[in-house]
Length: 203
Image: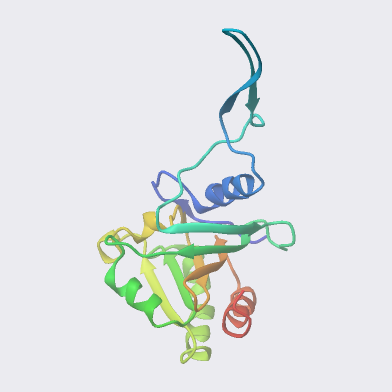
């Protein structure tokens, strides 16, 4: 059995929770209670109103979406792996986005981002396959590999995506849009297919 992920970073929100919440919001089911008041009849100086209260399904929790992300769609129904998300999430850099990542977006090439753990067994298992993919897609994809244990190298980026798991991979198309998200172990074949899609299909 393939291992999942080695550890969880101390972040306030995970992309997996964000994506589940996003899928709920896209179908119009937000959390909390909404109250609407409508005037139904007026007689002289007396106004009768009806108040309708709608409560969203129990168990749904709103996760604040980072201002850098615009969720357009989330599809988890057709994936072979439960930790894989086929998504359409636009990333818009702001003043806190590290310059190296903002520059990568400006290049208009697909981007492969991995947050890995130094000395982490699962990250080490993936390293060889990722290195081969770097060679294979050298002229087509920008590879950004970030040591999760050295936040000074990536600044606010882990919160703007946001990141919680190690290892965690995000694949962008050439339009600054996340099209795949993976948590935990991903073999070379899975990543290769995702990169092929990013380069040749854009989704």
